[in-house]
Image 1 (cartoon, rainbow, N blue to C red):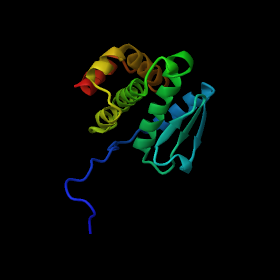
Image 2 (tube, one colour):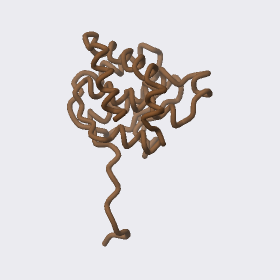
Image 3 (tube, one colour):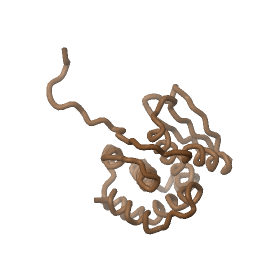
Image 4 (cartoon, rainbow, N blue to C red):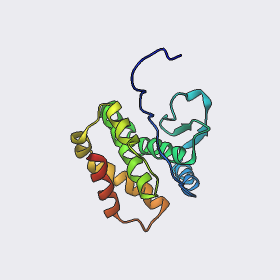
Length: 166
């Protein structure tokens, strides 16, 4: 018997698809940048954590979720170190990292549904904040995509960002 009435809360992660070899390619990219990567059940309920030079992922995620989470945490590592971490709010950091995950995920063919928009709204991000962070989101997504698929054009990134901001 249910303890509450009403509509169920939305599932926060609804990412599907096959990232193919991109999980391994991204993991290699992360390690080449000197960032340690480990799987740790103790971070639950978080799917991933960035510790500045170290990323932990929750084991047992689907490949699509694992890839998206790894992109999100990699974005934190690339964007939110040292002075930029202290110069930004948690809302800005989470919005930027999730926007990068959205762009990269869409570029490799993942189906994200409303997962990224839901996550950004959960952390109080909005279209205005995305617009203010557009340049760093584009640059970071481009760096990650270049490590995965050098042939992806910047136009794809701009198209995907327009979609997430809508």
